[in-house]
Image (cartoon, rainbow, N blue to C red; front, side):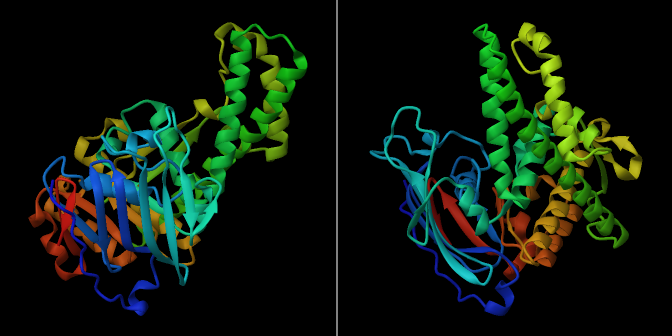
Length: 396
């Protein structure tokens, strides 16, 4: 295994880096295939080049764990520990953003069976859960695993929307956990032939309150995202990436279009009570935000995204992510969040690849990009910092 080497840090220009969140230092210990690694960076985009399996995506995953949530692979935290490691894993970073420098540390201590939670420290202070990280860093990403978004099941599109919501408002994750916990308890009660009306009424109140909050946040995200897409379209911004139309289909989303949230909560709670016996027969809750779907239309053709070519779908997805990044940037008073692009530039034609690089520079984002061919990124020149990844080791 190659020994990791520290990269020499270029002194950042405050005037050039104040408009973005960026990582100055990233350190890994026993994370995936890294025994130990350290990167010293400036605020420019970061290009990670190396063979398949060298550990490029692992570095992106480490960066994604600086934000709230489970990271870009949604792996269980126990899976992140390097094989044969004697303890858990750790990721540490020095992050710039909001006019301040923040030291973030996160990891899993010990290899307890079924370990699910991770520890988080901010400026040396232990905090409860990863949600607090949302105050310091936001991350937007696009990975090859998302290529089948428009063709895959509705659950993938729901997770996509929920992650976009999380990037805008990390506190929304609490409602998702609250809804999932109450729904699991209700479903379990059906399986165990529970008949207590009081138990079901209590759970259905929880499900209705959290479910409507989830649906309202999704609906707000889609409406704001459509507004941003329209601004980009009218300004001829990112013309290489087609504009799209988005519609959320779901029971609660439809109700929220014409009624106040508190009234929708009452209606949904009543609906859960009315359909309790039907759900009991199915042993699961059949209506709610866990059944919603995002419908995407390829704007220039007025055609469903699922019917478009693979290349068109890829371009449409890039355009969606860039519009969302702008939306997050607006919410951060003009600071670009971190952008993670795993193998994306290599799968675009030369024209769209150049357009993507132009967008990254225009948005002022510290974009982390991976690829096996350094030549793919040649157009960036001195606008990016190039790092080679070799078998769990890094070097300039």
